Image (cartoon, rainbow, N blue to C red):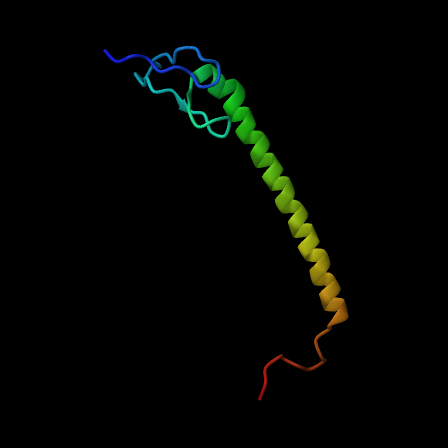
Length: 88
């Protein structure tokens, strides 16, 4: 029988789950190791959610900034009336 892994977060042994899986969970982004179900549920998933919320917030800010710049460029360089932008 192989030695049980240790949770890279709490250092407790990783228990075999009800499906028979003994290798725990991916602990990223908390660390590069494996973690127990308790740490996965209480720390890792919470951290992933916070990171996703931060990225969503930053993306929203970038979209707002892009819209502002687009509006400014359209006001500064309006398309010539009757011009399709094609040459010839």
